[in-house]
Picture 1 (cartoon, rainbow, N blue to C red):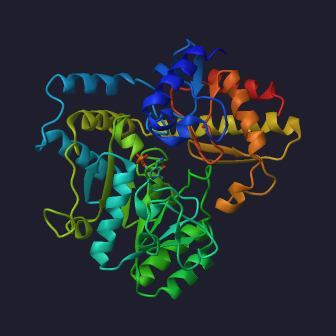
Picture 2 (picture 1 turned 180 degrees about the horizontal axis):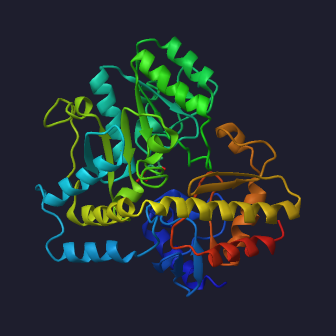
Length: 426
Ligand code: PMP
């Protein structure tokens, strides 16, 4: 494939935008080479600026679960745009989307819309802290909850007690209120809670993780976490920015059979427009301004274009819950095909899959947490990523990301993807 125009556009972008991108992973730093500039997309395919047609396994990092430029979503946005793009005043469609989301997801009475997953998680934690009157939170190493200060904390030698900033600009003061635990390790969280008894406002988790590749919580871990939170009076926050409206109508809560106290959303709920949301039962949500003391706001929150895209998307999913089964079946088919192709190559690998989330790690150990995920061989991953791209298949440009299948992918696309892998020399 030729990427001449993409390369020119990237060079031009770098003059005016840091690194040429508006979100770092897009720059291909983890895999080397230069990013592809997209011209347009439809269904399961991207069309880049050089005229290449590419099968897309990212779907804008999750939102486009029904494929690119899905007609009902696009038409809803066009019609809405003709009537004005923003008012900063209440509109009926906000209530329509809220009502639908609340009807689909367990354990939530009210929902507040924001503009990104970052905002959703940041606001959920503020609400939890305000509601509980406590400062500390626990997060899990390898889980990503957006780029707000409290979450940019990574494991280090002092991780068991205090986190340390992993980005300059995050103060030590902020870092000390975020404790870091290991995913799938209930004993670790339990002892952390015991060491900080009565001081933890909330535990936030990706109920199925997608930011260290796809990682599945063990039943014992996720149900144990719920029991621990209930026993200790800690709010359990499920970050369903990836899993919400993707794993099922009711998201991970429904699929795992575990209740959360606060749930955050992003991606699918906005149908490809900038939407995030956080939701909980009345008692917690009424703690939020203007009803309660915890402040949170947004000029473009509940924006009519974003709401119309979200409403069209959730309406489709609500009316056709079979989509989740169809997507899971496609993902399983892909899993088996990739497995067969990799087995023939005789290299060490692991494939993790849950619903329509899947990832490949080049390691011989089961991938169950950040540490095991980080053991993947990145040289092999780079060859795999660029090899697949050269065959017209776009995978996430980092081994720490999950693929998101979209329902526009056909079995022929999946077969072509598997054939692409078979033909690679890794
Ligand atoms: N939480 C999770 C689980 C995510 O995967 C992401 C983004 N990938 C976020 C929060 C942040 O969302 P956004 O990029 O919309 O700010």
